[in-house]
Image (cartoon, rainbow, N blue to C red):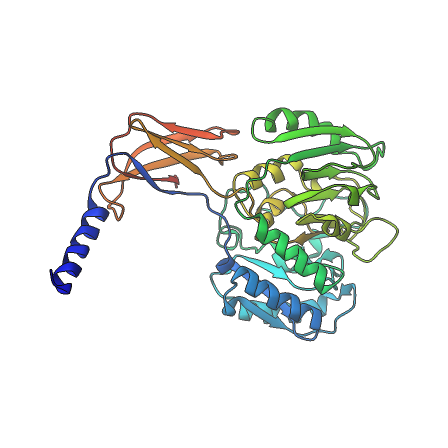
Length: 410
């Protein structure tokens, strides 16, 4: 048999394999939308060698497109940027941001504040005093709060922003490595909801019991009354309220872990007597959050643990889950590895004429079931299913042999 005939036969067999109806139903795609590297803009201060080094390491580690590397220049080393200096930076960033970019990562630790706003909120919304407060007052709300939007700039005209902040380039690289290592790991850790004797800062604790009852089917959740956890080997979530958290280094944080403490100045990264959120990252967490200006103890100015956990467990990235959990983030700094995504992925079991889809947690809503005679399509809608909050498994019974896709209904 000559080579040309062999090549033709191989092509024919490939064509038949692609277009033949399978003997069992096959799922070709399950929609689990989340931000990607192609949608993240990385802002680098070319006058800060540490920022340049962190940005380059992150670009390589995450495969950030070269066009998404956004270069600015300003004197490094100051905690606060004036609103006038920020306005000039914002114009440069706006002009250089590709249309596909939906979120930003900052590659410096200083500055972490713009006048009265956190720098992450300023880049997300633009500088606006309505996101600040003088005294114990609410601020402008975050329209992205608890949103189902997968493309925040298109849906809300804002780009959630997270700082890859660290005390050194080496610490930043370790943070980036932990975030990347978490992707799809689906860890079996524990969420620790820590209730402290600090009444002024323990204001999230009244919601812990309801959160534990709701979340336990999807993730192990414990309420602990203590000033600080010690010797825990499986920390995936850690929420508490206190000015300083003892015992951090005795615990093991799993890749992609989220941890924060409700207090007045955790986002003041380099010290005012309260614990900086950088201590969480140094202990092994992938993300944290802290205030840069006195927020008072408004729970709405801090992450809502139930929302952080729900969005993260549904397969969203760290930046999405965290930003969707804070109702009034203008005074709060988001720090961490934005693209960490430990709970991505859906397990598919097709047998006995049915399909079972399993995930750590499905996003609630209406899903469109589409079928096609070949992997290439054409696909048509054959059913719709409504997924309730807390669902971990979808079972489609008595499904005809075909190729299927499952996607959130518009």
